[in-house]
Amino acid sequence: MNRLLTVFFMLTLLLVMEAVSDPVLAQERREPDLAEMERPITHSELGIRNGIGFRFQLNNFGFGIGGEYRRVLSRYTKGLFEFQISSIRDESEQTFQSYWGYSVIPNKYNRVLVFPVMLGVSRRMFAEQLSDNFRLFVQASGGPSPAFVYPYYNHDLFDLGFLPQGYQRHYDVFQGWGDGEFILGATGQLSIGANVGGDFGNIQSIRIGYFFHYYPQGIQVMEPKRSLRPDIPPEFQSPALIEDAASKQTFFGTPHITFVFGAMW
Image (cartoon, rainbow, N blue to C red; front, side, top):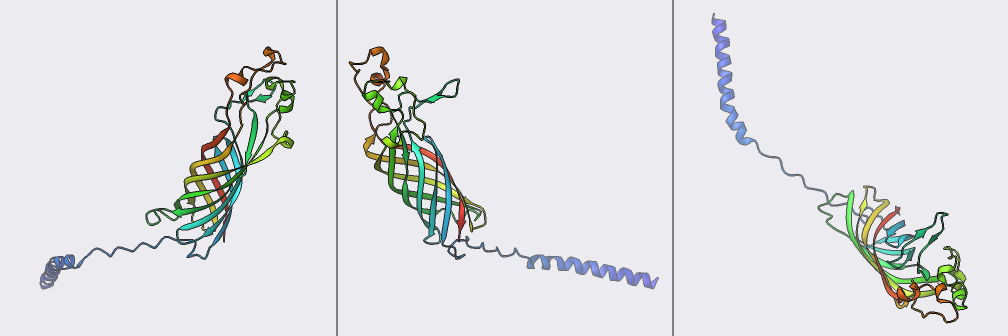
């Protein structure tokens, strides 16, 4: 019996001590200190200074291919040298295809290939707020844009009074180069994009923006305004040469989406 009383007394004493000690322990508890976030990783801190990329662009004129060189200037800023090969056209162009696969663009006069060469700068945005796996940036660039203008069909046959435009077979993209000429203009682009991925040694970028070309002397893309030829019967001359004639164009602009893949070191 004494042993049972002793055990009961000891258990009661332990329960009392536990009840008394809980408030004290509760007062001593506190929230842990907030862990400081690491600074955003940058190419300069990793000793990476240069990069080369291959680019593929889609726009309202078609597509373009090219390349670029990147140079790290500071923690969040890069300089760029870019070049590209693409085409430009009139926004009113419509392509029709025959049953036999022969395509034609009514009233088209010249094809135009452009070779823009640009210097630019990109700046990383919201580096503290966004993950290093999604490095948002804005970019602006500009420079000269030589254009190679060559005929869509044989203009000489029209000028000599034979086979007006509507009755000729049009050149393909590799014909007519011997009658082409280079015209110098200017180009530029504004875009926003993101470098994707945590590997800073790779380039995986996507850009969305606006691309433009300007040629002060103008480029005759569609049929120019001409009078009916007195030496050719009117029924053999397309009314479009008068009714839908176009002037030279100086400005060509288009939205674009560009993908860039490459490496940095």
